[in-house]
Image (cartoon, rainbow, N blue to C red):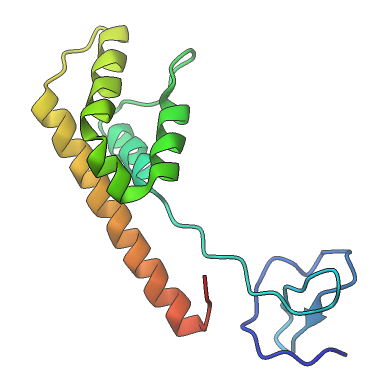
Length: 140
């Protein structure tokens, strides 16, 4: 058996690759196909787009057939907090266009407020995930 000093990762117990090392607590370490332990997968963190979608959902605004909401949210998540701040006017334009498509009123200032709140929430999620990863010994 391969001896490893990495944190345990839940959710891979059913893997059939034959290269996962069982731990005493019933979960396993993730390993590469050559048997060398790999670092655990990074903890998924909700980005600014995910947070904006959540905020809009709380206001009763959710994805509709034909809208580009999911693709916009995914793009914002890929950009991350800093680039979303740099592109805030572009994101406001997306919100304005979608409001127009739905026949809803839109105020740019309110759109910027929502985007800034989503970015702040994403920053907090990143900080929380970093603390959790550090406490668990994750790197990434």
